[in-house]
Image (cartoon, rainbow, N blue to C red; front, side, top):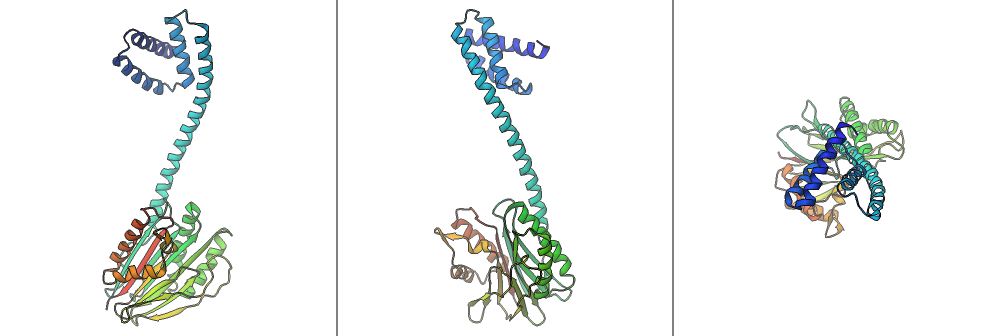
Length: 337
């Protein structure tokens, strides 16, 4: 018996002797402290049982044979338990490592999204994007050029988890490159489609709605790659129009032509882009209807854009018991003057 094992043996012997003699709380407290010593020495459950048997046999040498034999069975049980416990600990450590890595990836993903004020004082932009899990398959984009024109987009990767998040990252860098050349919706989607088709798996697709607002002539041009239709609010009539255009989802075919639609934007009109995580929210167990969403937005039409999207999100979050079923992205662009 080496020095470490001998020391543990003596400690356990003194502890067990004290307990058998006094049977008080102090002895039980020493047992709890001894368990910490076992953990530090990385003792297995079967080693602990064996230690107890050895000490017990020394203290009570006339143990019945059945009692001694019963410890053999207990040792086998503890061997199996020990193996299962160590495997569980290993899996738990690995899960913690993966969670830590995912948290870092999620922070990096969040850093890819724009977060600065954009455009002239004549517009008001608000956006909220909340992942259902750690990683999001949604992407939103906004930027302005040197003429104060504004480009906006919302995309949704058809897929979940890390692969969807990686595809979102690819979209971001492709958008940064393409928008340096042109901000026109049709051109952006056609070029982006070629990038996506070459670089993502055949079972993954991306939907996107992309729009360009010319602040000089107050004209909004847009194109869609199979994305959830948005809304255009008309202040003069207090009505909402669907924002949609024909176009195949990104990544299916290398050569796709996208329809470009143009809308004139008046003072107090606003544009709403969203992901299907918004329209797939449930109220009283039923999917929200587009008309219900319209009425929710209409009630808040006089609020600032960021206040509208925040309020809509919190209202729908409460309706679902604070449990998102899909990534949630909502963007509003208002013309103020």
